[in-house]
Length: 343
Image 1 (cartoon, one colour):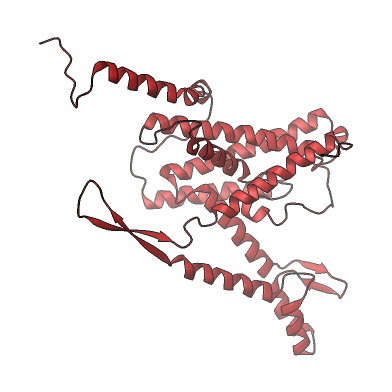
Image 2: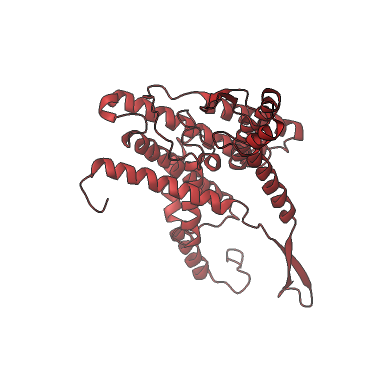
């Protein structure tokens, strides 16, 4: 009696061993990345409740690092005057052409998307209630993000985005890839820093919002001048509005030019952006209340609210990342197999 094993709930030692073996088999794929986690840089989870002022400080530091990387050009790039194929996608990818943040948040989104698909389809079994499983899952996501960063940097270089790879040479191609890789690593670590509670929100939302706000403010208040064939004009819509009112004798033609000019941002673009902004804020408050019943607590009913914009902009972000990845690898295949009809 003193040395016997006491099992509660009707379980037997054989059943417990079988459940432990099944759990160890289900986690086999995640256990494969344990050696790689030792060399991956990691942001330590705070052991205390981070004060609000400290969160603002870390968020500002992360944002400053991101903006600095968006302004530092990639060394060794051959200047190209061709059109940017990702001009309309860069806002959602938080990327800036020709800079260290060329890849933006594309590796983070793609790795998270792939890991969620693998976990949802039961290819890898993960129990998010266990801290060890959480650590392995997010470690695998980070490792996959770094691999995707290397792949996208390779695709950028080999597709000719920075010039002919043969003209650049092997050393310069490797240097460009290294710059993009370390910039992608910085973006991943900044997102992890904010996700673990040091900052406000997530890095993905912060970087996208910053990129959008920067674009709107610049197109509205830019003091730079451009030559459109009709004379020198200001790029910013608001600055150009006052300049046209002062410089043109006819106020009607000045207003028409300020609202409908085609060669630069105009006031119609700005007003349409503000209109969409307020419409989204208005519909953000809409929700549907679903009645719920609890099987464990009989007779108890509850309400589960579902917002109208439940998925927010996740679908747009994922579609943008998917299209950009497909484009890069299609360009890479085209450079290698130009004569192939399927490519």
